[in-house]
Image (cartoon, rainbow, N blue to C red):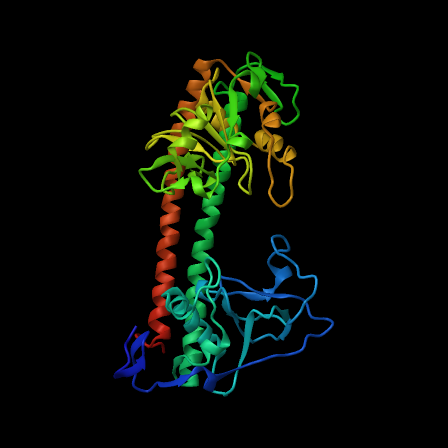
Amino acid sequence: MERYREYKDSGIYYIPLIPSSWNVLKGKILFKEEKRPIRQQDEIVTCFRDGQVTLRKNRRLEGFTNSLKEIGYQGIRKGDLVIHNMDAFAGAIGVSDSDGKGTPVYAVCTPIREDVNQYYYCFLLRFLAKIGFIQSLAKGIRERSSDFRYGDFKELLLPVPSRAEQDAIVSYLDAATSKIDKAIVMQQKMIDLLNERKQIIIQNAVTKGLDENVEMKNSGVEWIGMIPKHWEIKRLKYVMHSYGRIGFRGYGTDDIVDEGQGAITLSPSNIQDSSMDYSKKTYLSWKKYYESPEIMIKNGDVLMVKTGSSYGKCAVVKDLPMECTINPQLVVFKEHKEFSEFLAYSFQTTFAKCFINTSVIGGTIPTISQEKINNYIFPFPSKSEQQAIVAYLDKEMQRFDSAITNCQRQIAFLQERKQIIINEVVTGKVKVS
């Protein structure tokens, strides 16, 4: 793609040079803020962080908090530029594809002039979010948020290409980003298929073994189905002991210390993709660590999340960086009579998830009691067969994980390429014809 023939100083901090033919104006010269009343037929429109502004029902209905009283709600029309005051820094800026109503934390803007294409300025503002410029302007009011209102937007100096150039830029970027997005979706579908295949392989291995010709029997458990005749069905409490942090030995913020002054207290965030991840560390005082010897973590222990949104996550403890304990959201399995890695794989099966999902209590903060966990029923072969199954699964998972990593790298490359294209085009570094 060619560059513009001449450039000039813009006076804009975030774009020092712009094409000589472009103008620079404040946001308030280009857009006005609407404050429309809502209509009876209006449904809720949501501004998402990926830049889509659409009726909430078009995306999902779960995971939202509905207002009992829609105080301050405003009318939104198709084609409005919508800026989420608190999430703009994360990309929650877009042009609405629907009529409806939105929360008062949205700045709903419409062009003042006919030479303004709101879709161009949507690309531009999302570029400013991506480079951290919006975050730098706004004072944070809550974690992972910032306050960027119309009052801030209207004082921004913005580049103003001709309307014809704006239209050409939007058409080019719509086509280019759509092509990249389709490629990203294909890679994500491949990841989903690989994960689905992983699940099938694990399920078959820990319920049927590796011998396809083995004689089978009914396990007596509907969720488990048929298992090899020589395998046994056992409750977890008979093959290992589970330990959690006892209530009166809990801890508060005063017990959290700096690195070097205590042991690591592991949390659900330390279990990622069925493996241990020690990149996030919280330290608990040595006094609290030694107070609960039964939950001092050792390599080979199995951890499971019993409380919180990620309940059911499980991993075998490996490569401990130092002394560790657990927070109240975890349970640890110790003193195994069975192979710990086999148990960890068993927790990834559909039958284990059935046990887990039917034993969860609590709405806001889901939790599973240790008593229920101890009564989970799993099939077990001999230890030697467990080891053979684990060795097979380790090899297979490594192969699949390598393929998934390649897909993730491709997605990262495509996302980076998409951003580069947007940045170069909306700032005039390259010219579209």
